[in-house]
Image (cartoon, rainbow, N blue to C red; front, side, top):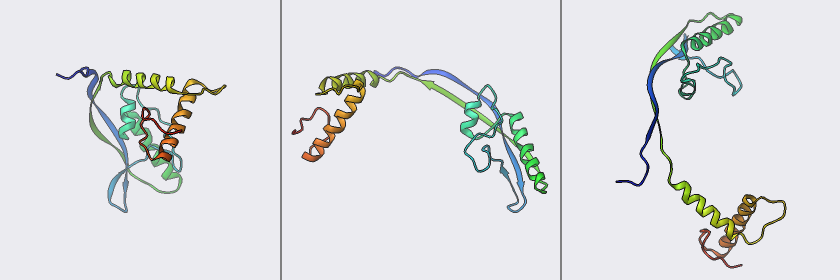
Length: 159
């Protein structure tokens, strides 16, 4: 039996999501409409649905209304340039299973961090304890590298 805590089901289910598409006459196939604005790394401006919107964003999918809006927006942009295109929305079945469990490592990391803070030999005024510890670690690694020793914090390095 493992000492790790069991997985706690947080949320699971299935739903239908959609992808806006346009007909590419040159390649003779349906292609997805980009969910990003052209020439920018920004969302399309169409809000995701309240439920499962984050999952949709990860998958590059939308709710039905959002997909239709993007498909028609894409067609309107093409029409403004004198091009007539066909658009549609492709349906996808999505299943998800989100789980969580507490990591036991965190207490060990906290103990090691506290131990490190006590090893710090000189605190500089104006630094937080965290900044001092980071500086000390960098100096410690540098001393160890110069001496050709391992970079483990607890290993003694020559001054």
